[in-house]
Structures are given as C-alpha cells and as structure tokens.
Image (cartoon, rainbow, N blue to C red; front, side, top):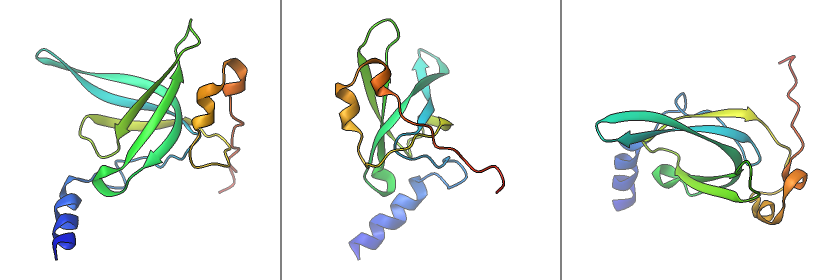
Amino acid sequence: MSQKLIETVEKTCMKSKEEIQNFDIGDTVDVHTKILEGDKERIQVFTGVVIARSGSGTREMFTVRRIVPGTNEGVERKFPLHSPRIDKVVVVRSGVVRRAKLYFLRDRVGKAVRLKERRVDSKK
C-alpha cells in the first residue's frame, strides 16, 4: 500500500519523456542549469562526459565530468535528472563504451580521456 502511495506522489514530480532527451553513459552532454543570483535567474551550461547514472524514479541522478581548460584537473557534478533546476540536457556527441560506470576516466589525462564516437545510421 505505501509503495503505491509513494509511486503516485513521485509521478507528479517527474518530468515527462518529451522533456528529457535520451542520453547514455559515455555521451558528451550540455547540462543547462538554472542559477539564482539575487533577484535574477540565468542559465549556466556545464559540458562534460556522462560517467555514471544511478537511482530510479525521482531519485535518478547522473554524474558529468569535464576537464578544466588550462589545467589538467577534472571537475565532476552530480545532477538530479528530474530537478526543476535543470532546464535541459543536450547530447553533443555519443561515445562508444562497454561499461556502466566510467570511473577509470578519473585517472586519465589528456588525449587518453577521449572516447570513440558512436556513429549513427542516418538512413533511419
């Protein structure tokens, strides 16, 4: 009984399939987040590779990692998928991966961080 109640409450908070663009592990994405600065609200873009997805329902999260230009330091951010603060997620390119979690990219530097690009058949 309580599980069904939780599911009905969660459905009201979840974004629809049209609002969320389908992306996978290894894809390079632009995450548009809403930032509040005083009275104003602006959109900040965080670009990086999706290295992990976890959770389900309203608790679904994804981790994006990027390398800061000028330094060889990586920055990771975890985003809740159904958050109202996330405006949209745009897939820039798709990568070919064979794992569900790409934590091994944390140890890599430079060109070793790059992933092969997944080619999409344009006939479909």
